[in-house]
Image 1 (cartoon, rainbow, N blue to C red):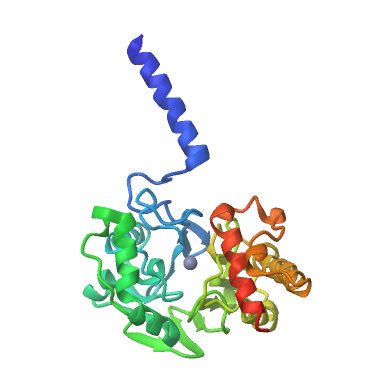
Image 2 (cartoon, helix red, strand yellow; image 1 turned 120 degrees about the horizontal axis):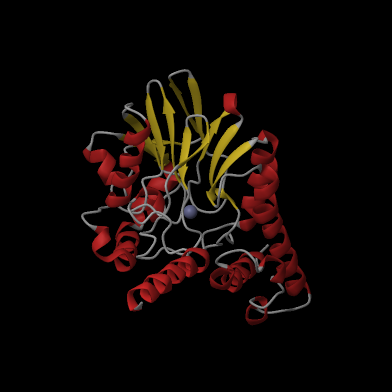
Length: 315
Ligand SMILES: [Zn+2]
């Protein structure tokens, strides 16, 4: 009886864990979740929408791969060598094709810290020049931060910048698939990169597009430029299928709502606050309740408001 109660109790404990904390959706792997096939030949391991932690092993962004008859292209190195290896294991389960290229969607830790795993296998890694510069400049800080939340899971991860770089675009033709690696313009962080496959009307947007969780605005983020890039470059391309930087695969309407509309709303609120003679201390409290259902709202809403105030003060 005691044993039965223990079993029942642990069953409920697990259900609570799965629905509320969602600490890990794929416990048998270093990955937070098992890759899903989004459209034929394109797989993505969807990251947690929480900040990086030991529980999600830093897998809080989307790690994707494109399978062609002439090799596999991986999007994002992941936050550690172990995460890169775990993704490789999943790739091997769906194809015998070798990985021929890894693309970093920006210079952040979860986009590039796993590069060393791939470079050791002789695989090329591509990133935008600004992302490479970011990686090199902040190498120590990025690695130390990952080691601090990841503990033993950091393993032998090192900072290995991409060995290939591009400025405006980089074209890949592989097994009849035309892949365009693009830099549409400044957005969330230096060197944000988009992977566009016109023949499938499909884009891996990188961190220009978020949903499910609140987009973070950093000190080096220009929210005005982000909106400009969105309106003039991304919007006209109008991909049907999207894997965003964060959140499940979706479409333009959804990322427009939770990225573009959020930025427009926050800038509008901060603009009105400045117009009314408001200061930084008051800016943190502009009304963002419309977005309170987004994950990481509590971590980011006030910080974002402060960043946008500092940016808009000078506009
Ligand atoms: Zn990201």
